[in-house]
Length: 100
Length: 404
Image (cartoon, rainbow over all chains, first blue to last red; front, side, top):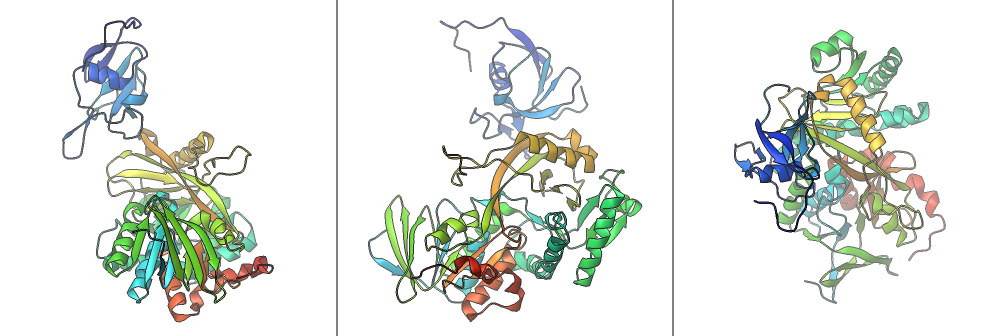
């Protein structure tokens, strides 16, 4: 999935971390957008290990739930479609083994 | 499906929740021709939104209202004992797993004052044949190491636990259908009257049109909407909406096999089969309102953030590990309380053939009340176990009703 570039002006990009990799995103975008822009549709795994991804994009289905942490705060499970990106944000699509 | 003709049934049950579907299950088995009419879809109201607690100790809401209420609360224990037996047999009765876990329940205390209240409560329960037991700080620590070491103790009841409110009603509805009950969703009761011969005429309306029903009996099993429906006959059922909320965390390893309640604060907590922690306890949500400020019971209540924070704070105080969990979702549901806090179950004296069953704690008590109600309807008089819940205690409210 790609951003529409033509005729669109966005704020200067910032870096967030997704599964250990640095990804550039624009302020105002959500974590769900950041994940889709990183060319991954896998937001989380179900109990059988199968991939699950964003479905409703409006906070209802919880399919886009990821782990997120800001700086040294503990990891939290949050719905990616409702969470705006910010500098220093770390996102994990698998359960983090240790606190950041 | 919908015609202008009138259909005859032995009973019309209004409301496809736990009480309605469980009553239909019993009555269909007893040979009655049953119609269940549900305005939305099955299990859409309080029956599917509640905490799923199987609580048999005297509830905190009775204890906080003084001695008179505590005495009333104690009377419900006799019914709770029947409910324990009902839940023990329910998976066999309905021939399917319902996530019934009866591994025990703890009503915790944080202060010595609360411990004294627990001792008073346990003594009363023991007199009434319920084998609750006071655990001191050390005994509680041994029984439930995941709870806070700062708790002063708890009242323990081995039979308490929880079940899954998402699947119970479906099991009753399916079983009732197999026994010949008609269960229709998406049709609302839009008119109800008593004919000169004492039978009832109902109009049910849905997107496909209207259905007319003639029946000697009607059961209003629609939770906090019961007063509105009884009002169609000019009758007064003193039930009042109680909008609540529930929260669920992400899954974790098994840490809590018990139902947790608190004697001095609003709390219910349990771990589901899947590992999620469910948190509630009677914290109010906010009823939707119409433009004129009156409650709008047809729209969902909304989460009250202040109460949600307070609910989670109590829960985390009781089980500190909760602070590591993430809150997945909070939802609202509206139950109801009666004027004296006890459920209202049975025939309305001013309207023979009209039955009601609503009034709070009806997940725990629903299955057994449905059984007793079905007996009432088939035998023509209520069994002794229902006597304290009969609508006749509010008969004075219908002293000026004009029927038919």
